[in-house]
Image (cartoon, rainbow, N blue to C red):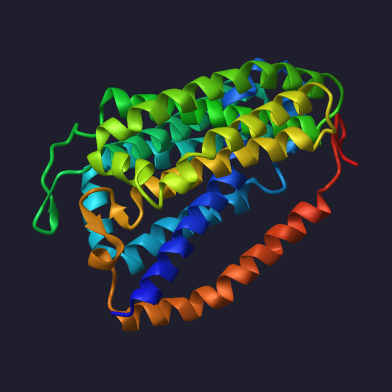
Length: 333
């Protein structure tokens, strides 16, 4: 097994997960906020703000899950039975959300019901993603090469906290996306929502950050011993600067700034997550090298990824460029 290939695949999967959070996070966030928008043109405008890109955003979720199965099959075999319930809930939420997204246009007589389904599907999918993250962070019981825990081990106060935190984070991403891409009343409502959600997210991130070192002893060691200490010391300064910039931009900055600074906060949290678990794929239990597929399999998949990832990035960039304007009541302009 080539250790460099294993590290490369870990970065590819991490990139896919990060791309999913960035690209699908804001449209899930719009779904979470959907019931707070006025029935009629305001909801249609919010829907149109994500309609051209939302389908392609979930490509990265498929790549992350498929890449984990192919590149780290042992981790996939352990994680899946440990987290069946939240993963199934997430998939059902995404499916129902997608159905509601399409049918609200084609079945106007029941549009209120489809709007509620869109909101509930987005909320369930996001909350389940957060619970999955929390359950993974708090540790999975492993004996030999198999999951050794019970059906409900994923359900803890910590996993519920991470679930709630992700709901708030995605909702803020959705609000800041609408600040950038909408106008009129929807734009003003998005700014108002962002002003409430931004401090709520800071409180949630603070709570998760304080709790995380106590759910797994290795996290404390990685953060407060060299070389993790080099990141731990300046991290509060970076985070504080990003939070101040976000707050300022929500009130007075250009429309694109709140979304970008929200992404900066997400990037800092993902960096902290990476420091906490590296080099494990199952924190505190299985490293990336122990879970890796044979070298021949990694090379075979890398060839395909070298072709597919640039293609995905190209058509994604093109779609965002084509629909780069703001959304009015009549659509993009």
